[in-house]
Length: 443
Image (tube, rainbow, N blue to C red):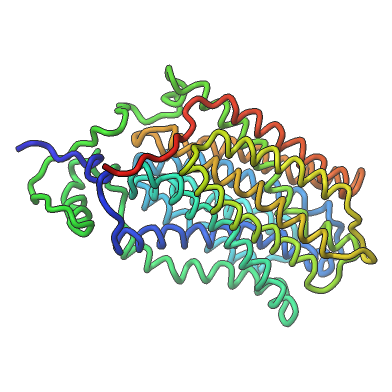
């Protein structure tokens, strides 16, 4: 019997309701990831008041959580290639859900930091496996757009946090942020466990799981025999799954450039989500206004990322990503020049936070899509997970660098630092060889 080429089936297949369900379930995990990711930054002003601490006391807590994300991304990336993307994704959600609930009971920085580290392991592992999973559900021509729709759920989750956190803190204390932030993803985990499928390209590489692949392909509308043999001829074959495979001939330049781009972009992005609420609070903004700042930053990110993905599909990734890098630099510089205080109008600041969020988030999400495009199936989760894990170095630096810049020169220094980081990101992306080409219509 002639082997069935899973890659060809997935490349020529049409979107169906079942496929939409799978993408939605994967994206839901990323929504929770984005919401839990930003809970701590929103809670910090309340924690400062409750525990009578300065903002700088929380820099190490933010950093240790980001170190957990760095480790979690690397471990979960390898786990995704060896155990399956679905298994690694759901274990990541389980980890950060339980740890976040436990954070509601802490009474000091030590216990808060320990639990934030554990939560970080799960938060870091979710996004790389989500990106790898949806990348292998859809044809290559739709890959960049679908990955963007999935990863853009990080700012969607951030928007939910920015909105609901303000409402919760008006009537309840900060502990309820962590209770609800952990319980909601845990409640949805069972649904994802039952209905979310494993990647068909991953299943094709493991003969013991071919019956599962047969079931998947039939649900997708492909008539395959129960005793079929499967191959994936559309992907470059790599025998050994390891980080070393990312530095083989043809990959090393893209790998290094991608790593630098992720470090710089995550320095800018995490500086924003970790310190904007505190920055606005210290500037004299009252009531819901500090949380509105992070809400607008994330809202801009959602719109910007979706528009960028449509442009990348039509025009390819290189020109669009370099343009986003330049726009990010300009918007951050403009923010550094605005008056941000209790007496100045909030409208220009919120407008520019929206634009900066649009450009920075769009570029980060597009970089996830680019990473999934660069690497073949055998090392896709490892490639994306390792790149994101290395990028967390920038996220870790954001804890100390953001606090230092605010303490040394206030928000002008802070936003100029973000501008410099985005300039480095754009230059690094210019050196990548395997950019996404414009999509060709299906035959």
